[in-house]
Length: 274
Image 1 (tube, rainbow, N blue to C red):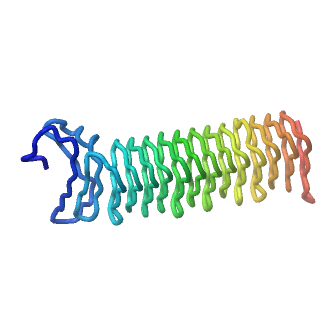
Image 2: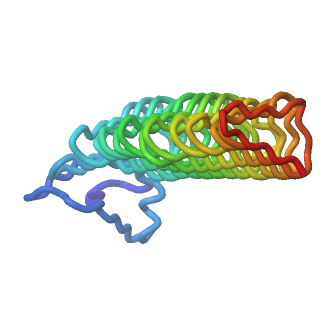
Image 3: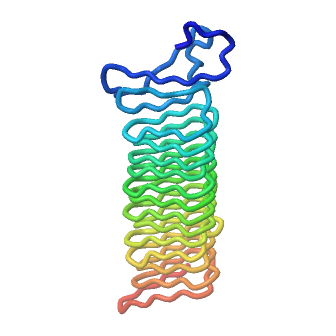
């Protein structure tokens, strides 16, 4: 690419069109930098064309292809069918019509229609996947997280609500300032404003504070956790602290811990307190 240019090259912009469509991510090799040249380049792939530069001062767009950005910064949005970034500071939004994968770095917001994966990154606002899952690890999310399918959040913080509309939410060691809502919920450690399992079970273990817990069509299992109240079809509380009411439709079993009150409302209700 640089044949005939004087050195050192401070900035590079290039476009390469190949004879056929590019189905895999391209690789770059430099005589001086060897394979490390990819750390200094940002590029996007659209059909048979590769477009890139040594730094980006505007938006990155590859509507029908893959935008892959490694290191550096993008002072605008990144829009593509598939977005992959690694250690990149993005001042605008990341929007992918397929999937978005963000490792390290930061972005204003992230949207991947068919799935979002975020690791060790800082997202200023919302994370959204309208048709897929959200897999988030050790990230700081400044807004809400919304996904459709089974989603996992491990570590980090979420400043807004977490909602999984048609699947299970598995959350481990995450501090959620807002509510946690899914078909079913499995939460270990961390905290949330409220936890709601809309059609299944809510299982909470070792959580510092989970607000109001609801699983009106399933079982709420609270182990060594603190909750403001619990309302479910079945309730099992083991060494849990319930600062308000514990209410079950069919049965309630409480071993150790405490609750302000225990109520079982069904005709054949059963309550066991040890």
